[in-house]
Length: 396
Image (cartoon, rainbow, N blue to C red; front, side, top):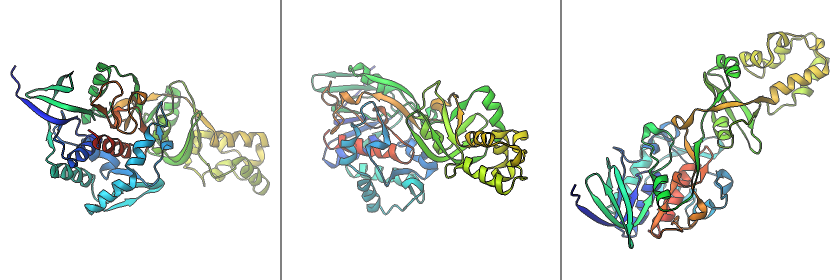
């Protein structure tokens, strides 16, 4: 099949947050840029971020907010294009935003404001964005990358893989970035779903399933990490910000611990109440602090209805343990279907931390989620997209 050939300076695979950011930067430098995407619309994941309001960054951004096999890799890009640089760009376009808990920044109106800004910046530099493009073979001949799309053959001196990860397949997630990385000899750290709800073992699912819809603030711990935010009981298991956060550090077979009352010393409180109100039922004390259905599930009806004077100090210690160190072994996660990000990806040790260029193949770049850098919930993954895309856009 004959395909007309289009020559360009920079070819970007993926009209994603990082891809558009890279295109914008390269276009500003006078480079001819073409962006290809198999979707029918650019920036689809931007539009659903933050429930449609786009949690575009965070007030506090550091390498500590990211997971990677090379924890220092993200430092350079994050310092070269900071959250304040992105906020300055929003100010230029008079995009209103607000801060929520934990420093998270959201658009006042719509995530579409962010996408429109990026597309406007690309348009200023005559960046060509070609949608509904299925990419076939990719090869390099000399200093030129040759990319065969359905109807066109592209030739470019620089190729940027901004194709995202495997999360949310209904939005068009594709493994092409990993495939191209492997094709050119890169090591790929195994990929798994991150920032994802956890499912429960059958017994725990039957126990906690009736609590579906209840949300409480709690501290959730894994072996080396803990997060304090809301958890949400669902009919399949556990969700909510604290669970999504811990899911990126949880490994199959491990237990997690949940403290439902992180601001209290429950053992001390219950022992004091036992002296002051010995005839009070245990549940009358705890129902002031937690939803009644949750209290009954954690303690059982018999224990919950026991009077304080009937319980020994050791029994009250056991009650405190159930409320403040409840141990669960998740059965798994809901997988890429509901995951916000993909853990793992292209090995950072084979990329330049300053430019995102491959150390194996000159002119080949990897940005955004396809790289083995995964942020916490709270705008960190979009900030990584802006920072890594900008870093590549400055040099491609």
